[in-house]
Image (tube, rainbow, N blue to C red; front, side, top):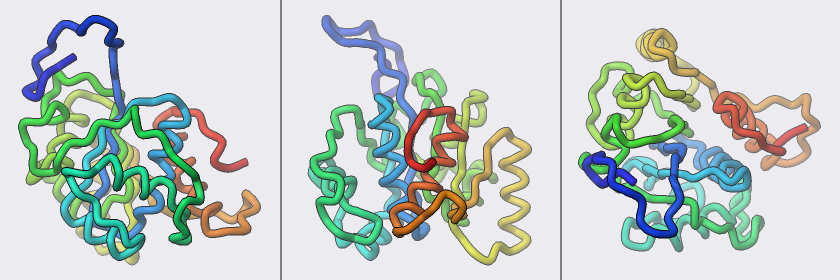
Length: 222
């Protein structure tokens, strides 16, 4: 496996090759979307490299009451993924997070900051307008933006689930820039034709569309 600087090292005895999806969570409202995507990836047997931005931790605290801490990320992630979109704890039981690797948002020496670190692609869910601007302009101000820039330059799948309304001209131009660069721009817009009867159904629809764009099978909506 590659080390923190992206250098490829031989696999250790008993270790299998790991090619994850990077999931970036920015500071926009919509942390239940991220939770649903993460559950969908894990249910599909996919590995995940998780980057939770500093701003998104404030949003996560507001929307769920969960404080996401680097030192206790496994416990906090399990609590988050078990929670329903309505904020009710324990809805999804004990979610296994063995397939997740967490990288601190400020760690620019992390594996996903290098193009030689093997990944399938990256999903930014939700994507704030600040995140969209940073990726479109190539700012790489944190690991989330850097990983997205690397994903684009390596020609890998990048799905940007933008969650904002209304959108001004500047953000629209940034989204066009991302589209021109090969990203899939996927507004977090729930649909009602799948027979939604609960807020979780609407959240799962958006998460399912993100996974559709990534080519990952799921059963999140009919």
